[in-house]
Length: 72
Image (cartoon, rainbow, N blue to C red; front, side):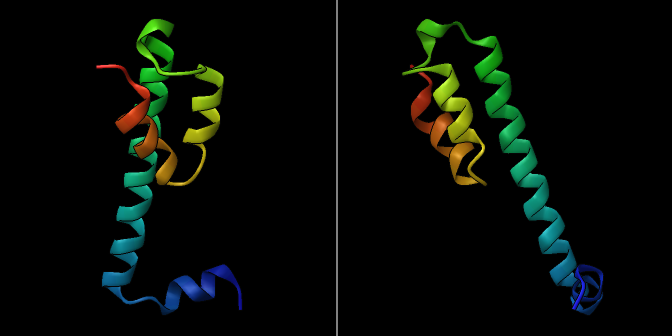
């Protein structure tokens, strides 16, 4: 079964959920990358390179960075 066939079998609510989850993932990743790029190194716990790699881990990575990677 192709990806298109699977998409067509989803209900409208299912399609909305998939699009919403994708939008949330993209938004969280963009926010994490924004902070990584613009914040000085002294305001970030650990290495910026390491946090960039962590941010690539689906939704969990950006959430972990935004929660624990920025010094308050």
